Length: 394
Image 1 (cartoon, helix red, strand yellow):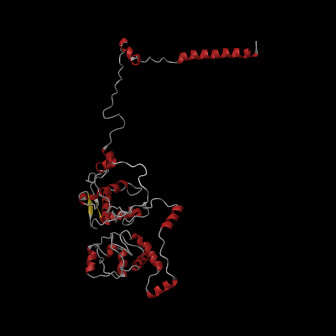
Image 2 (tube, one colour):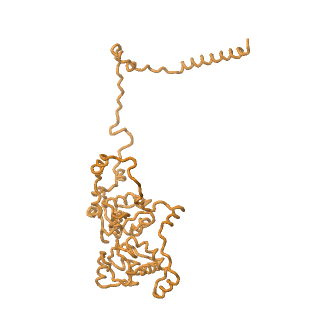
Image 3 (cartoon, one colour):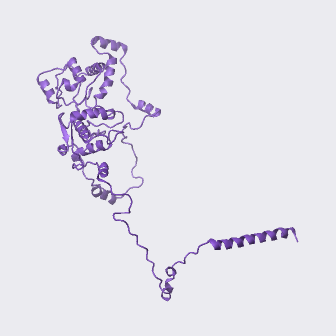
């Protein structure tokens, strides 16, 4: 016998033994599967020759009353915790009230860190006041007073999402007060106004009529769908006619900061030393340039309502050019509160002392003013502001 047969014969016998054992073990442990309903697989041609098998109906599943039996019905207090929306028709408003003065105190504590003391905004946070008459401009200022159509949106958003990081921590009366103060900042109510669920719907928002139901499906879509749609070579040339405005919502990196520095308009060149000396000789009482620069920085808290310089116009507050020595309440075209009108009638003048007192505490110096600014607390800052304002003539 060859060497090959000596190896192959025992290996074949061993393999046959293993396969035989596997077959018997499988037959012992495999459970028989019921045969399928054969009637479902009979060819249609044989249907008449074969008896139709009985149809097996599925067992109906009875569900509990009211659903799948998961969880439980929400309790009224649980529903009230999330059902807090306020609608334009007043539905959802809680009972309560709040006045402008109370709202100012709460706003300064809870809101001013992001939105500024009187809604002028800080950093990239949105501006809440001003912007009236800018919606037709290329760069409109959309605030509560210039853009928002419904007062309910103001209340609902403050109550639902503010203050940032402390959402829904305000009581209804506090939200009414903040909403009243925001109306006051936008020159929509007087400083003695109190907002409540009773008079809420009496407040008319200036831009309400410019919001309407979207009718583009009926007015615009049929026009575009029926017209021939151009897919290529539609114009001889493509030109960029407009750029998106920079709204400063992206944190600056070193690269973007450099680009912003290049884009910004360079400041006016400083006067030559000889010119500066000559101007100082002609105006011996001219303020210190460093003081004026400090005043310019301090004026940022005023510029949401006031403008100075060439082309300045009345906004929420009057133009402040040539303020010192001018009759109080005398800027043309601006609607002053009664206390300013009375001062103008009496011929009272803005002196440095009078302006200092007003900047320190507007409501104490001119009781009844509609100006919501709480005042400048630092005497040096007041001096800098006055120096800056004095640098602008009529």
